Length: 279
Image (cartoon, rainbow, N blue to C red; front, side):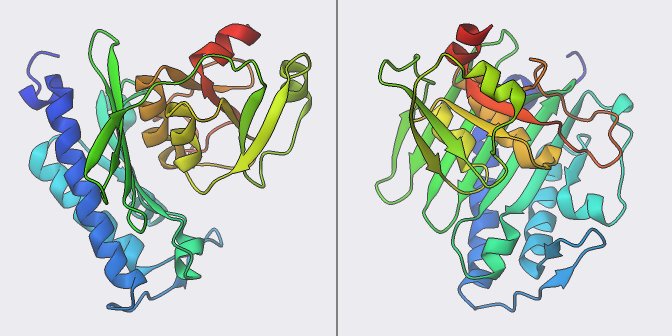
């Protein structure tokens, strides 16, 4: 990593900076959510919606990330939707940003939305922050050059921070995170064939991945469409806590790939213990 800014070698310090940026973006989004600013909902070309909050939050995040690392490009959901592209082959590092994960919920007055920011190095997520502005939950994680990592959960109301680690295979059965895209398929059913399931929990947005990182669940299967900015921050946090996100062939998800829409394949997010058990 010769010639790169020293802050890239100090992931803990960089992570703290990114946490502050996520909180700043969250505070801006809450001004829209609380009615202080007009939300301004419009429809994108792909049929999804975007609000003024998405766009303003992404501009704030991009500006602040570039102030820290001016030569590291930022790939945001809204700028990508408007046609902005980078040549990933020319950048070992880049940021992936979803300024408002859960836009449809946000626009409907549902507080279950997050700010997601991830740093990618050669296709791998090495730093991630997920912040839920309404609840004050913040999850963060980073990996050092040697592969060691740290993942934390921060509670705004009590100003306390706790380290996170994925858990061992539970004796009383698996806890599975679910969304409406988590319906079973043949590969998952084969994987779970001889495993006991304790319960299924529904949580919103990328928080599902953080619940696994926090040792409160074991896996989250996803078979519906997702984009790279939907998973990158959670993936970094989960890796730092001892887990991973893998496709149905067992390959770790990579970022900045060849898909022109930056779509992910179907995947399973799980603890490292789960993947070792089913291998």
